[in-house]
Structures are given as structure tokens and as C-alpha cells.
Length: 193
Image 1 (cartoon, rainbow, N blue to C red):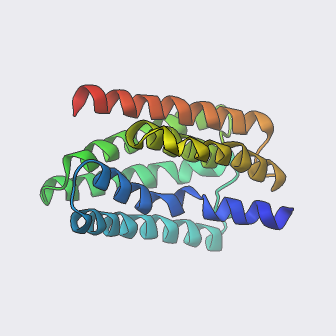
Image 2 (image 1 turned 180 degrees about the horizontal axis):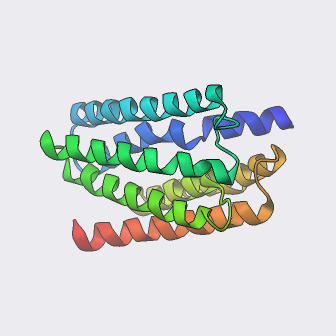
């Protein structure tokens, strides 16, 4: 079962989900397939850069693993993600990127900042939070037919607990954070776009 838990964690890892999420946000907001692919590709460059930073951190010993599972090590990760997000934001503005992606990126930077603050008190499961936010957002923007994906939330929580990366409490906090952040994003779309 541990192998199954590792497969789930890998396939639904926040890093793996970013570029497809960018593509779907853009496509769902009326952009062409070509423009959606281009900006998903740009987002992939930022994901790769952050991933390389994490891998370098693992090699140098200030991160224990690619998931940055130790709460006290995340203080070295969150600022880098926020800075990368700001650079991506600059690129979007400079190259007149899609407004929906601009909003999604601002939302993402705020979400990472909030998660960094929560992380000061408890190591919330970012995996569970990310999958929760993605599924709730997909259901809102693309329809209730995506509600079958809700089963992935407890599956991810189980995988994180099974791998001994999180406790039940940390996965519940991750779920709550993902739900609240999704609602914040939905509210923002309704009132600001």
C-alpha cells in the first residue's frame, strides 16, 4: 500500500498540477488553445525553476526531501515561491498576458503567503490543500459533473498519512485551507473579473 500512496502523492503533487491547472483556467476563461498552451508552458518554466531549487536544497541538505515535509524547512521554500510568482506576474504584465491568469497568479501568491503564515503554527498538508482547491474550483467553473473528483481529497489525505508525511489533523487543516482558498478565489473571480 505504501507504493500506491507514493504513486498518488506523485501524480497529484502540486508541482505536477500547476501547468495543467493554468491551461484549464485559461481555456475555461475563453482563451485559445494556442494561447493557453503558451502560458501553460511559461508556467512550466517557473515550476521547473522552483523544482530545481528544491532539488538543490535536498542535495545541499537544507531540505530533507522534495516535499519539504519538515515544517521548519518550509521557511526557505515559501519566500522563493512568492518571488518566483512575482517574477511570473511581471512577465504577465510586461507581455500583456491573459487577465484570468493575472488574477489566478495574484490569488496563488496570496495563497502561498497565507499557507506560509499557517505553517508557522502547524504543518498543513499542501498536497491536500492544493487538490481540494483545484477540485472545488473545477466544480465551480466547469460544472458539477466534476464532483466525482471529490474522492481524490480523502485519497490524497490517506496517502500523506500512509507515507507518514502528515497526521490526520494536518491533512484536515490542509483541506480547510484549500477549501477556504478556493472560496476566496471564486469570490475574487465573481467580484473582480
